[in-house]
Length: 200
Ligand SMILES: [Zn+2]
Image (tube, rainbow, N blue to C red; front, side, top):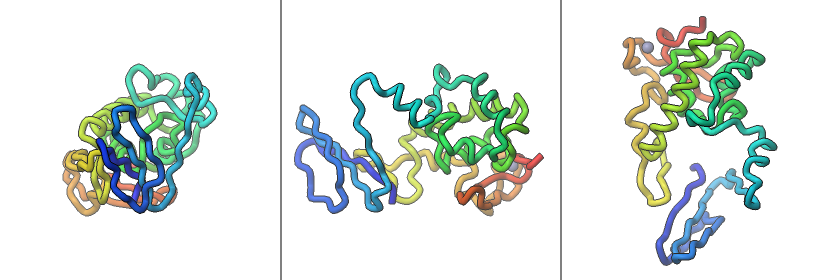
């Protein structure tokens, strides 16, 4: 049900939920479709990108050269928010949604409800490193096709084949064999291994 992009090299077919058409000089068109109309789009003048990130309080890109461990640690130390909710709000680092945040915390072996300021330096580093790794891998695999997601060429992503915890409720944890559980945190379905990710 999420917003989707479709690329058409020449003719654009009639589509009911097509809202934005971006035409390229070579004749191709990128079409944005959004059944629920939850998506937003903003056009920025050249040079305004950085100011835009600041105004939206968006954290850095999840790449080694942008995502600074020291600043991440400083921000966490000042916050009582559950780590999952904090990672989802995009202020610490941009790009983590509900699927990948569960994957990152499972890999880092941190319980999603842990208060940000109780995390050890070791745990913080693990979350930082796994965020870069998981999002890098997700891009490489073309995203996760859980229900309807496809890329602009109509192709499914394959990242879901590498999920260890998301949507695995009732299955054995691949690391320790304990059954994966699901609970609600901040209104979001949250998957975790009660053995690998202790509340602490
Ligand atoms: Zn486990």
